[in-house]
Amino acid sequence: GTSASMFGLPKIHPKIPSALIAVGGATAATHIFGLDVALIGSLPSGLEAFQFGMPAMPSTDALPSLIATTLLIYSMTSVESLLSCAALEKMRKTSYKHNPDQELIGQGLANIGSGFFMGMPVTSVIARSGLNARLNAQTRLPALVQAGFVFSSVAFMSSSIATIPMPALSGVLITTGIGMLSPVEFKHCYAVQKADAVPFATTIAGMLSMGLAEGIGIGCATALAMELKNNGMSFDAARMNIQEHIVSTPLHLEDEASSLLPGSYSGQHTFKLNGPINFVSMFAIDDLMERIKDRHYSHEDPIVLDLKGVTALEFTGIEELVNRLNEVSDGVPVQMINCTDAIHSALDQCDPTQQISRFSTSFEAEITDAK
Image (cartoon, rainbow, N blue to C red; front, top):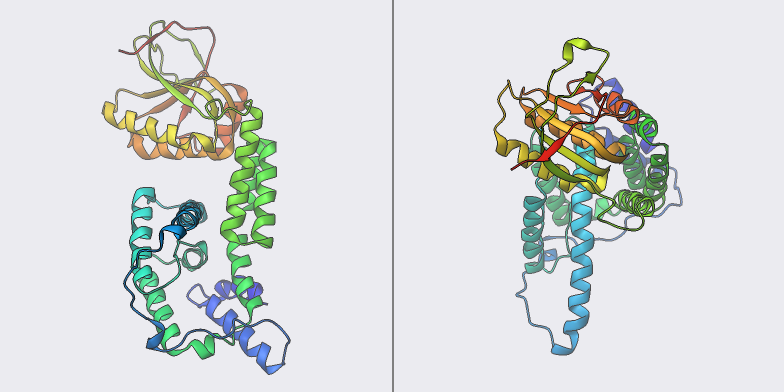
């Protein structure tokens, strides 16, 4: 019922607070009909729940265990925060891209503040952000309202919150997870590489059985294991590398739209991509974007990528490459050469409007290292 309400109410009017009504309705129904379900249960209440405490140095004997636990929590919360940011960007396409460094700095400061009040470690989670995205929130105001509501709830309404049934909260998480699993995107993934169905399926199973962040983590781990297996268990072989070259021989390019032919590439500076283009290549794609920015291209000087050395494609990687190129090009033509049929097919899925020109070469070209 919670999921159905969250899906149906926004269709009546987008401003309806579907999550609040769904959880409130489920809570009322639970107590009116005397349903035997698990409730949130007792919570600390009143301002006395906020107790200030100064940090104290633990005993020497406790340090090894404390350090190991701290590193484990740090790793889990950092990964969960960054996965949540990445998932949110997939849920709602905007020009904004999260900065991992700033996210982790903010999380560190939040945990320092939590520690002074003897609170639990905190992390970014997809649940509230996912609701904001579903309700078309445009500013940071919802986050501030939510923070104030959480504080007020703990201080003044903990007895009411304790009556909320756990299945209602599960419905909120399931609905948010379903919003992240786009059938259209799955179709694109499957068209680029059929094996992408495996991490997609494990992500769904993890979300339903363990939680949103856990499901995303399981999906990423599955995809990484598959990439390592396909590349001889070598992490270096599983990611893309970039070389800069100068084309020293004119290229004869083949494309159906002859008006897009750029003609001779002799003397053209080119970025040559080698290896698989996959989600492991995100850092290499970041490096490529920085190199492109550093060259200060003019509108008469196209950005040229040579894809002859690409060994495999994965939808997340090629989609990220296309999106980032469209962002940094700022009107400068972007052209991909030495495209195979598989690359053409993948680009048709990720760039249906053909903002990036793609070409095949009819013979080998001499290429020298860029100085």
